Image (cartoon, rainbow, N blue to C red; front, side):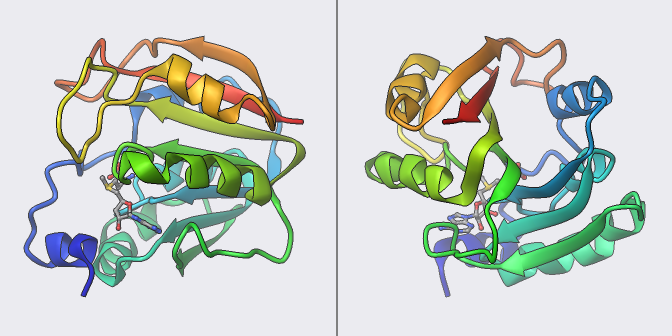
Length: 194
Ligand SMILES: C[S@@+](CC[C@H](N)C(=O)[O-])C[C@H]1O[C@@H](n2cnc3c(N)ncnc32)[C@H](O)[C@@H]1O
């Protein structure tokens, strides 16, 4: 059993905010476009699939922890916008090969959960999974000086540099609202796949 599955089974999931991310909801509310294929990676219980289900035709939650999926089915699935066809895929992000690349990928607290030595592979996998012209939307957290993780500290400029070969930075802003206790430690970043 991997460490994440064990954490869900032991209910030691301090990262789980119990609701969707306010900054993501704001972003989704501001969209006029409906995206064809959308994925949320390292999605956990999957609350963020609720706002995403309003801007997606086909929506995928991706995580490799079975108990997180079970929680999604019980706690979140009933609240989804049924216009979006939604699937929760039990997959390893780094190994996943979809039939077609995504128009939009959302990352919140997945990047900070993986070991920093895997960040290059994270950037390369994002480039592989997102189609040219597509969007990577990441809420970068925790923007703090340092500290052992997870969550491992993340600095926006380091992520911009990591993605620079394959992505153009569109915006990097502090969200208006954050989960309690995370205020001032987050940046909502949007990149366009070259
Ligand atoms: C800190 S949790 C965040 C979960 C969710 N984003 C949230 O905010 O509640 C990190 C998640 O990433 C998942 N995860 C870690 N490594 C993964 C991998 N290689 N492939 C897929 N999921 C992974 C874990 O199972 C866990 O659900």
